[in-house]
Image (cartoon, rainbow, N blue to C red; front, side, top):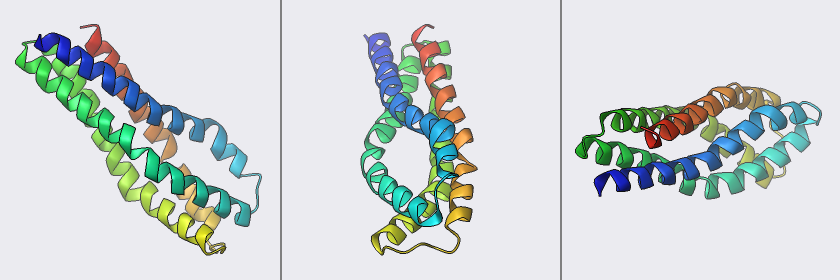
Length: 157
């Protein structure tokens, strides 16, 4: 019974985390390059409005993914499934590191660009803000991808 619940939690975490993972991969592979081809005012308006919706909607799958990874790890440990507990636990830790990157670097930039877009202003450092945001998008995508991989391994343990 506990093993089945641990597997369900791992699967729920994969599905939730994959939403954020796909978003970060898209940003790393497509958005980052596309933004180099627009002016600062367009960058500010686009990214400010994009962050307005992403920061409202993506916390739900993000939090669910983290909580489900933790749940999978604990349930697997209680069920005596050491490999599944360790890999789901590793996924949880990877997701916590992702949250730290997001909250310390990405989120403040998101708020700045959203406020500028709301005010129809272009910060003088808009390009520098975006470069700083871009500097953590590949590590964020890698962390999410490794978490999904660890959870998939947990399911097959």
